[in-house]
Length: 577
Image (cartoon, rainbow, N blue to C red; front, side):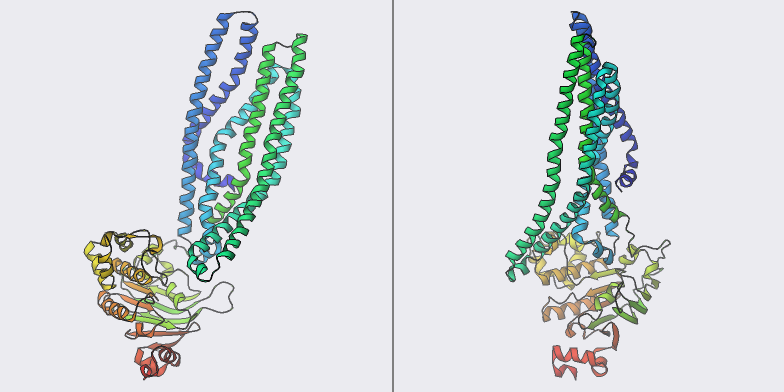
């Protein structure tokens, strides 16, 4: 998974990667050549007393060292640029994919997990990539080159490599086998931490109201301790690995000096060659340790890549057709033709055999008991779900044949839970139509009965709005959400029980103003309160996913028993006469 992911996202960086490899090869060759020059200085300069040879060879070593340093600095720059760029590209790809997810896809992954995948998981891949781009080029060249040059300097001592390198390799393999499953587990536990923390931050008022602070703190502590224990198990393995690698390195150095010293004393090996051989041994083992540094990051990066690829390879349940059809006219007509919808694996449909039409210039209302399918019906229009059977047509074209953005452009949706974005009042109102003028914003606020409180806010249209609209009341959030839909000026308005936080007087004034402000569009209102929909030209009554009543308020009071029960329960027996 990691290889395929990096192959896909590193393709645009071929040229910088080529430059990086050239720089790293030059840097490594320079580092490998320096011990040989050092051996020449000792053998041909120091022992023979040739100062001129020492100076000339020393200047060559200084020049090579400077070039190696320049190559190293530029290589780090290119590695960082490639790593950061690829990480940004992966984040953008994950974000774009998630934006195309349907509600069912979102539920499959969960919000907390998607946040972790687009932050922590990609950070792990990015960190591995930066290390791998440098060390995984240097390490093999230095290891192979060091072995060749070490044999050239002292063939008698090269048998020590047959012991040190395999021991290191076996130890690294054991560590990787132990660590990879732990890293996979760690990412899942980070998901759990995010999930618990998100719930506690979002539901802090409920937690306090029910005095559940201690139990929620305990729930977080359990998730936190679980993650901590897993991280400690991984770190214990790595804590053992570094000193073990250093022990192998130091024992190898001692062995070289022990056996090499005897060869020097016997006169079968020049002392300069012994010095160079020792340096090459250190370079070989350091290159192995560099590979280990990358190997430390590899298991977690591999586990993270699997999770990121899972998102990128998910085909959204709801997607654009291969050849989308664009309606010739934004008429505002919405038609349901024998529509049923059921969740996968459910025993029965949520809504069943719905057939009706919403006309422009007409207010249609949907009412029914809790769980009767009102919101599901509304969500079928913008294609948040696809109908299991039947057809939903907007502007005369099946929604499944339209591009989603084209479909959404003709709809103004006010959801059940009003949500505002961090910014200003104006930036929220212009969310659907950035070019809207201030006059249009004030007009929408006036219809939504929000003009007075916005005018009283410091800055008026430029007054700050916190994330989620937490610095305004629930009723104010609903009215600003309604104003946002009005500014968009769509051909179809969908109001999903968005009048619930308004008092009766404000609700009445808003509905009266709304009638005038949306007279050329189709208006669909989902509501729980009868008073909100009494004046609608047509009311659809749902019960257990089926239409049990269709008509005006007066007609339904007389002909529809479920509707009459709702009216009596809310307004009393007198309103049902």
